[in-house]
Length: 265
Image (cartoon, rainbow, N blue to C red; front, side, top):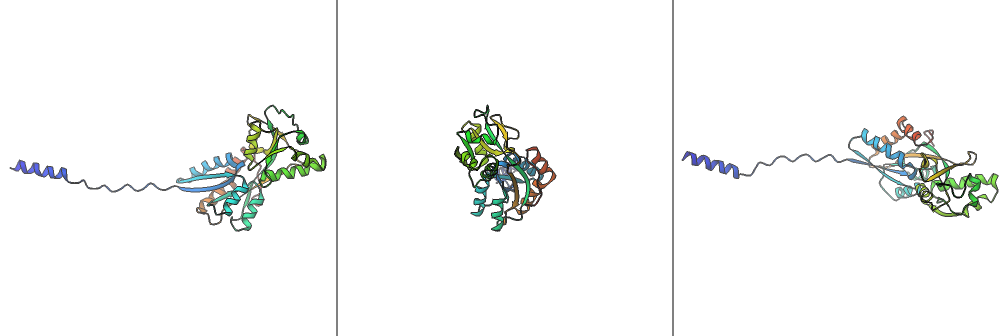
């Protein structure tokens, strides 16, 4: 009888519902730092983002790369961003005036170059050769590289003739919305030449040849960076800006062909 009782107790124990284990704590949600950056900063900011993530465990940097004018418009229309890095002062200044970014700092400078397809079929040796080509690709006027291109052509007209800009613009077949698109068209052989930043071809891609523009007429691009007013992750945004301005950031800039800059515009 005792044996039967023990058996019954054992069966009841086996049939009883198991005590619920406490739920594992949910995994910590990663913070996402959103950085709006000019397309010409792609490779540089990809490297700095990886460094930032290592220094800030639990943080993921998401880059939104496009023409500075596009990024400015997105911020003006309410897009959520923590940091904005522009390829010129114009678009940053407009956002600062509207109270949409905090005080910007210039972190780098760049210069324009001419790129031609491998083999240089149009035999471009310098800026003075541009009027003779059939297909030139440049940035749209509202794009920083497009604005710098206009300045270069106007400066060159002082020595190459008053109609130099007009002659060059007659051969423009496409005006692109960011500098990477200009480079892509030249690399694919869809243009005889294009004007991009030196850092876009440093090191030079296999599909293009670089032709320098004389210092006396070249335009120097200034790159400002700022945290966005009311940023979702303002403290992390300031830390990212600090990284770009730091010695580590400046070394990374130099490795990509950028020139250093004073910290204020």
